[in-house]
Each structure stands twice: as structure tokens, then as C-alpha cells.
Length: 204
Image 1 (cartoon, rainbow, N blue to C red):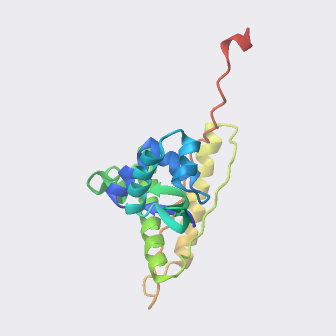
Image 2: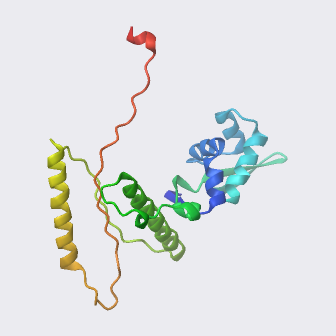
Image 3: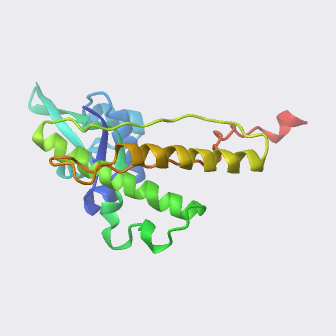
């Protein structure tokens, strides 16, 4: 099972977004049969089988083994990945394009860049999996608290200068056999997890 799988096929994306099938995928992080899943999600086994077949057709679940029980053969299924990401490739005609509005201070431009990142890395992962190779990548993820908006602006300016200097130092347009890499650095406000809703009577 993969940690993360990238969905590029529009039909597979549609299948994965169905609420019932998404629940089945979540339960199938561990192998299970239609009978077992039916008890967990509260649906008839026949209906669970119908959804499992749709997921299997699109490579989202796979057969692990078959167990014979009397006159019945029980199929044990498992999700092909622990989690899934839908690539913008699945929406090829309307996928975001950062070049349409290259405003580096725009949140929507940042979203378009992030979507392109998902698309490109997803394509690399898919190709590497077929070639049985790994993809060389690097990422930094952290948080910083700015005292003022002026500090944030100063940080962004210094960060841009540092990255520009590093690119100037290591970029070699004439390198024979060299390989181009994309560098993305982003800063955005942190999103805090939503707090569980409280019963109004508890607050009184």
C-alpha cells in the first residue's frame, strides 16, 4: 500500500468523491471483506459490493486474497493507498494556471502555484512508480509568528533575496546533462483546526 496515491483520471476522481465510497476507502486501510464493511458502514452487503467493484475498476482498491466459505468465495480487499490526492490533471480544461495572473501577493496565485505543484509532483510520482524509481525532492514546512505586518514584509523581502542569491549561485544554464528543477517558496497565514462545536446548554 502506498502512503499517498495521485488520482489523475477524471472518472477515478469522480468515484473517489462519492461519500459512501470515500468511507469505504477509509475503512480499507486494513484488508476487509464486503460483509465486514457492510457491518461497519451500515449498508447491505450487496450495495457495498457494488461500490467496491467501482473502486476496483479505477484502481483505488485491490484484491488481497480470496477465502472459501462453504459455497461462497469471500473477496478480501484493501485500498491501494492510505490517502489520495486528486491532481488538477483530472480537471484538465479548467486546472489553475499561475501565468494567467502572476501576482505574487495574491492568495489565488499562490493557490494556482500549489495546484501546479500537486500536478507536477503527481506526474513525477506516477512515472517513477512505473519505472520503479524514486523522485528526488526536498521540502521545508514550518511556522513563524510575526509581531507586525512590517516584520512579515521584511521577512518576505529578505527571503526572496536569499533565494535569488542561491539560484544565482547554483543555476548553470550551460550544464551538459543537467536537469531543471522548480523552486517554490510560500508564506501564508496558518489555518488552525476547527474546534469541536459545543452544546449550547453546556455554555449556560
